[in-house]
Length: 82
Image (cartoon, rainbow, N blue to C red; front, side, top):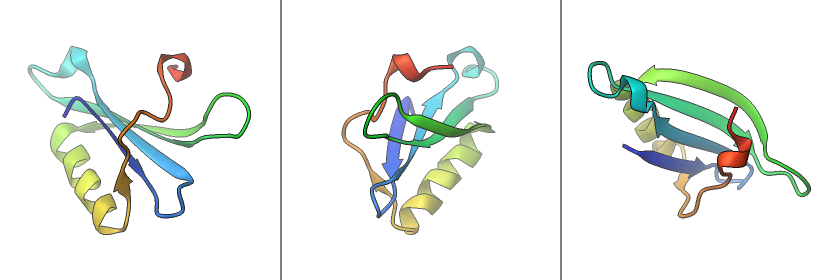
């Protein structure tokens, strides 16, 4: 998993899954950002989680069974990084 995006069935909330490059070799970890796009201005980022890779993969699968769909294009870019 390098980076992945999921959007809810209402096309409002978005999850971004992206790996922590500094922790990848010994103890793989993944950042998860939850937010939504706003009509004007930068995206509204509401939550960030930091999970082990296996827990992040479980959440990814769970969200998809709940109706979340993969996004083909990133919803926000480096300008939204904290």
